[in-house]
Image (cartoon, rainbow, N blue to C red; front, top):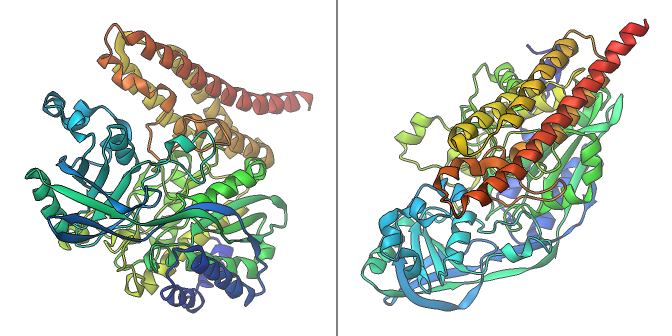
Length: 590
């Protein structure tokens, strides 16, 4: 149910001010930093019209800017796009073509086993060896895990056949943000081209006929100064604590649905909250990222690195504003969020729209840059086209633009944006940020996350069978469950001071999110590849595949991974016990 304040602020949302930004951005190709920096200045100018101060950071980012590319087969030139971070080959890579059938993109996120991916026949027929030195042709998108695998198998190049008439830009690097010395060796070392489906079918036929081809790609790669606008709207009671609302303003081509609409939504929320800043208890920080498309989340990674300690100590949660306000996007299905935020997000969507949202765990994408710090997050995209309409239009899956297949193409123009949908989505983002800034008790339920941890432990134990014992982790998890129940009973009854309870809720995020979603240490960045929950012990799912020669290695990995999980669960349990003990001591003293 909406409060009087919430109703008043939602009623302030209007369309003319943000829509003007969309119309302007629809004329600016926001790929090269020169145009992106001009776009950042425009955001700052629009904010200044309402007296909103802007801090303009200027990080230097490693960017990869695709240029004109092509595939040549038998005297025919096929138009292509090179994914960002692939290797430029202006003189062309010449080799025999080799076709590998399409596979679900998700498989490449979890496996590098050729038999598991392509079947035993593929291995028996020397498929991996036949890829070496050839230009591999396969369907799908420029999935970083896929490209990394084919590079390891020795492919001379890769041609990706997209599913439709258009070619979708993308990136093929597994490195999140600007590389450091540890991640630099993972930088792609292979030439990749993307073609549309009609042309791709001809190239596949040529590959099946044993023909050769040439892959020509052009990219400009280097270090670029990139503007990053930030607005900070200070709260009146705890100004050091803040909610982070963020989205990228660079795009492929003019990128209206991805992400001029998001830029405009954030602009409008900044206007409304600045006007009513005296009604905020905590602060709201709104940031527009550069380097999302051509830098593999370079802007948000720079921000996470540069302000890591501030984020660690003060950020309540982050919410990503990407591709809201697109035509036909009238449902809220598969909303990406971390489990502790699910009840909160569903309630926000229902209070604005009256609709029931469905949810999923977040992919490793869309500027979810703060997992390793341990910050609760929700939203990637927001509204999506109804599944029935997607089927009626014979669309294939696209993660942005509300499901419109103009995503990451030259067709993502002004017609993709929808004023009515944009107003609704703006209200959803505004209400979520406002409630977090003003909530007496942070509305995140770690009991929901604990259920995911417990269920994952059970699944891993079932997969491991007698070959590994997860009982230490399961026992620790049961104790944490009990402590969480006691903690929320007291917090929701008002038996704990809100500041005290909120500190615990924030500390649980810093402890549990890294073990749930990351492999790498805190304050680093995991690769841009999805991993299973509790990745430190995910090897349990394949324990049965190991023979006597390798089983001991796998068990050693699981032992070390379980130690990490148990330690984190115990740390979370002790954190709760401390506040419960303090309360008990205070009660005894009275």
